[in-house]
Length: 206
Image 1 (cartoon, helix red, strand yellow):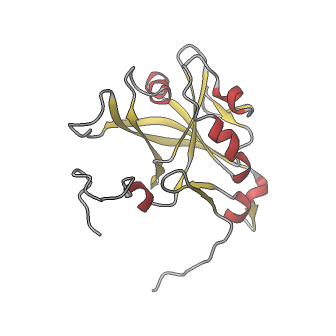
Image 2: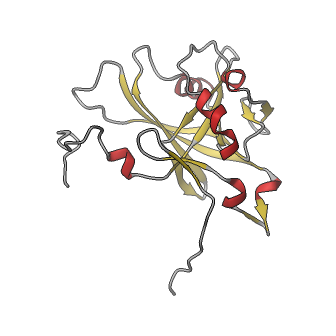
């Protein structure tokens, strides 16, 4: 099949675009508001875009009629955020933190996870997460929104420079991060997720 995303002429019940870009790691982003309230929210538009210096990207999309998502607002206000990786064991707490609640709600408490101190930031991190990246805002990029998008729709990309990384010793094997010990949860299309439990190695030619 072939279709044009702008025309939505795929003929399927749901646009398959996102389901074709898989798997996507999940950034469980922790921030703190200017009023001091901790915020925690998952993002599946997430990846590394540079390693030297290390820079990570998250993107907040969709309809937000009352302004930017709490996460984006907090990052803009404070310049700080932590990206916590989601392991298989954290799937239910991560999902609980997706709830649409007001900015006065602490999603750490909602999800039942523990706030831990960051080394270089004033925002909290998820103590139960196997890997956490401490990030400072590098750049905000406003992405296009279709003319017929619902009122209040926004697409915002956040680039963060990594100033520190927490890695739980239990996910290390022979000096390497072992994905089969990390068991990262990844986002697929629709309402589907997967977990990495099997890996193989290939050597580049030359």
